[in-house]
Image 1: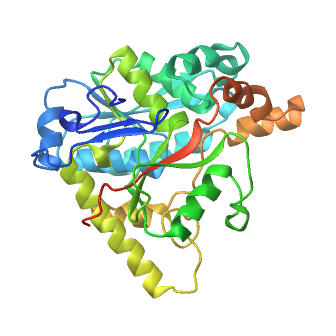
Image 2 (image 1 turned 60 degrees about the horizontal axis):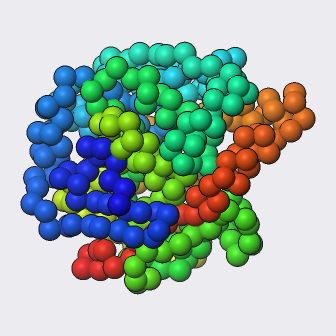
Image 3 (image 1 turned 90 degrees about the horizontal axis):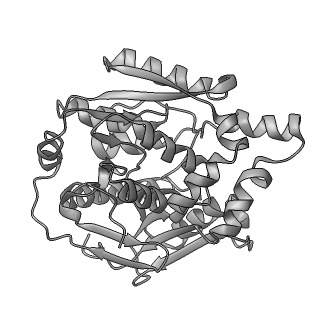
Length: 328
């Protein structure tokens, strides 16, 4: 069972995304965010990997609210490939009085030397992007890493599920039924709504694998750290989604992910009462992909992702867990 390393309070959450098993102990006593603060007091150096997106900004906002000492680190790729991320992270840290470091990372060499495959193999991921994260985890000098994450993804009906499947297959919602090799949705447990969408082996699963192997303390889903934090978040997410659907009965969009008037930052702000700015959703790999497409004449996926998908098939399946929060 995959629990990461120091990733969840008293190891209350364990999920095996490969063999489709879960071990979830929601009845473990805890004090919500106070339990997080108490546990983090054991570490002398805490680092938030700040990408410039709302997820890592949320991590910073929560630590600031709890008065937990930390610093943020942003990795700067060669050729200014992710200059937008770096500038956004710098601005955010200035405005929020956060100690911020910038580390250089030669992404071109990491990919073209084949080093990405070494890290991908160790974490068992089909994502070159997450393979680069693994090297960053190796390079840290911090006692604890906090990175990535999202609010609980709660599916209330088939429409929500269709949106997740379309997102997983990288297609428009109208085409969600398209069969696409290596991509899709799978469920652990009962397929009864509400369902928690946990993530993919390629991203959260492989990250938990990797930090467990190298014994690096890391919290990758801050909103899941304790059962209370998780359940309180689920309740607010459900409240938010129901309100959106009631107020917009003819709107077929999913109120969880949007880059227009209903951004992900609004969900964070509603659920956790933080003040996150609207940020255009990016991965940091947009310019890298354009480079290979227009200068090399081959797609990024063809060169780097597809070889990993042949090694680790079906790791791009978004895995949901049913029968967990039926009482909400």
